[in-house]
Image 1 (tube, rainbow, N blue to C red):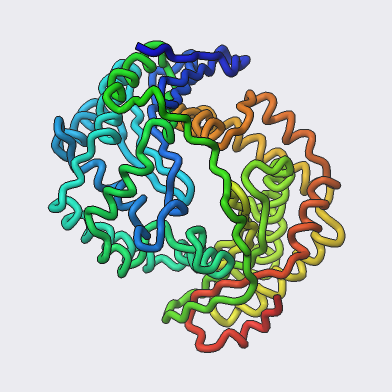
Image 2: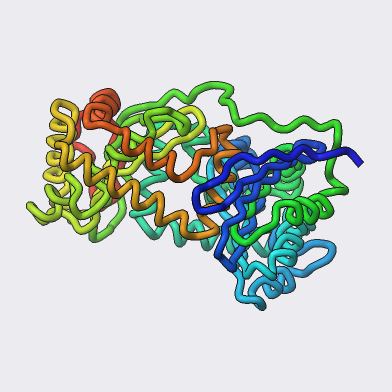
Length: 436
């Protein structure tokens, strides 16, 4: 049997240890042993999401997320779910534009069972025609539910506007037409191409033993390990997407208008991402943020208002969102633009930056109190080819962010031509008075 290669990546001050093993064929296993906890989180990450679909495959990545729980040669759908739920655990999955994850969280003593179930689901899905027909209806219901929530749908409208007819511009769930048109052979082709050990990362965190996790994962994947296969490289874009500007109006008889104003942002691994995190937090990350104070507290224009950033492997977005009465849209947009101009010209005050840094620090530390969050963090660092740093090092990098650094990122990004997506009871976008 070919030997695996194991390294220790990190030792945290709290006594936790992160280890990484690469099995023959490129399957990567990374764990974080966390002292003093009684839970364990386990996940299998596939380095493929909706961005990897051809137009004919649109919706396949998310469709597979459903289908893999429908049964294997060893277990029925009921057995898959009941085994984890019977011990009080949680079993789930999610699909992104650049990855898919299948994960479970259980008591530490039930980790062997969770590993067996999740590995079985990922490696031995039956993908029966009957299951595809049944689940097609479920996904169409999910799409309908999503489209009934404008506060979610606005993000898809904005992505479609700024990325156009590219994989990044298409909704992860697919469309009604694309889901109805998917065949078993199309879905299976996506599964066979992307669900290979060389393109997967297995991660576990909590009260776990690295050697034991490796042994169990290796046993589960052994029939699929190809010693000659090369590890799939970190995603590299074949062509950086051309990002567009303009306005998108989705006319609907809603009581509230939803609007999203945004510009191109930073790619995921950009070294300025810490300054960006502070920027979006200071701008619209809480009740003390600039937008919340100006739009909700001082003017009462909206209930929900926030700023956000999103990074992909080769591009990103930064945006401002608000939900308000339709008649207030022009005023909200005017305040948005006033605050953007102010930040571009003058940046944030020292107090605003200090509060923003405090929020980022708190979210970083408090989030890592959960074993699932730790499992996610170590996996994403591996998936994205980034250096895995300790929590203390992360906090240091946030502390190093200066008001000038935040201002520099804001001046560069927010001075770009902006794009606007609106959902609401409007017939003509000219009523917004929007200028790119």
